[in-house]
Amino acid sequence: MALNVVANVEPTESIKPAYIMPLAEKSLLTDVRQVNANFYVAVGERGHILLSQNGIDWQQAQVPLQSSLNAVYFTDELHGWAVGHDAVILATTDGGISWLVQQFLPDADKPLLDVYFRNPKQGIAVGAYGLFYTTSDGGSSWEQSFFVELAAEEDKEYLLDLQENDPEVYRSELGSILPHFNRLFADANTLYIVGEAGFIAKSNDFGDSWLRLEEFYNGSLFDLHRTPDMGLLAVGLRGHVFRSEDNGQYWQQVSISESATLNSVFSDAAGHVYLIGNAGVLLISKDDGLTFSNHSEPDGKAILNGIALDNHLLLVTEVGIKVINLDKSE
Image (cartoon, rainbow, N blue to C red; front, side, top):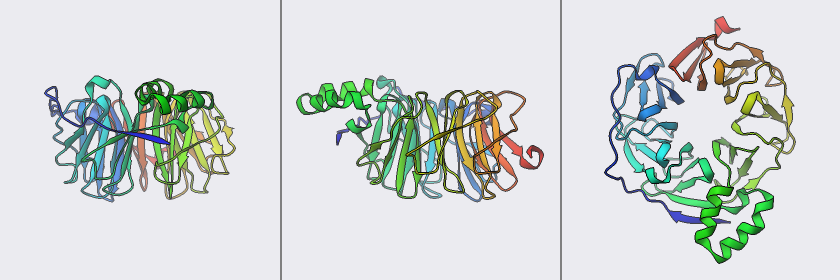
C-alpha cells in the first residue's frame, strides 16, 4: 500500500545555472544514454549535461542549476529527464538543448539516484533514504510515494500501525527505515529496484505495488541486468556478483578476480556481458555472465556507467568520457 504526498516543485532563489566549462567532458560523469544511433547524453557533477551526435565530440548543454546529477533517461529524441542531488529533477522537450527544473529540494539534503520513464508521461525517480517520486504528466507535477512493503519484514508491523494512526510520523520513519534505492531496471513489463543491504524489489504494475524479494546478500547492490540468455545479474559492493536463472527467486554468487565495488552491468548485441566499477574495473564475459576475464583500465579511475557499441565501449568515469576499443581488449 502506498501513501502519496505532492512534492514541493517550486524553484527557489538559491538556483544558479551550471557553469559552461571547456573541460566538462573530462570531469566526473555518472551516467550516459544512447538515445538513437547518433545521439548520446551524459550527466555528471556540478549540473554538467553533455550532448553528442557521434559519441566522440561533446557539447555542454545550458543547465539551470549546479546540483550534481546521477542519472539521465530519454523516452525519445526530444523528451528526457535527469536527476541528482537536492532531489533535483530536470526535464527537456527539445533533445537536451534546454532544461527546466521540475523539482529542487535543497533543504531535504537527499539525492535522487535514478530515473525511468515508460513513455513521455509516466515516470519514476528514486534515491537515497527511500526517496520515491512518480509522475503521470511528464513531470509537470511529482508525487512522493511511501511503500510499507519495501521495508524489511521486521519493520512492517510497526510501520503499518503508524500508517493507520499517525501518517506524518509514518512518513518520517520510512525516511530512516527504508534503504537507499540505487537503480531502476525495466525488464519488459516488470520493474525492479536494487539498493542497499541486499535490497531487491519488483513491480508488475509500474510501481503501484511492490514485492520485496528475499535477501541473499547484506551489502549494497548498484545495478541489475537481464543477460542475453535471460539470466539476471546483480552487482554491487566489494566486487560481489550474483546470478539468477529463475527471475530472482534463487541467486548464486559469481566468482570474479576483482574486489572493487561494481557500479554497472550491461551487454552488447554479440552476447558479451560487461561489469564496470571503481579502480578502473572492466570485466568481460563471453558465456552470459558465468565467468569473466579481466580487462581493467591501468589508470585505476572509477568507471560509473557505459554503453556497448559495435566495436567499442563508451564509458563515463571520474575523469570524464572514455572510449575503449574492444578489438584491443579481447
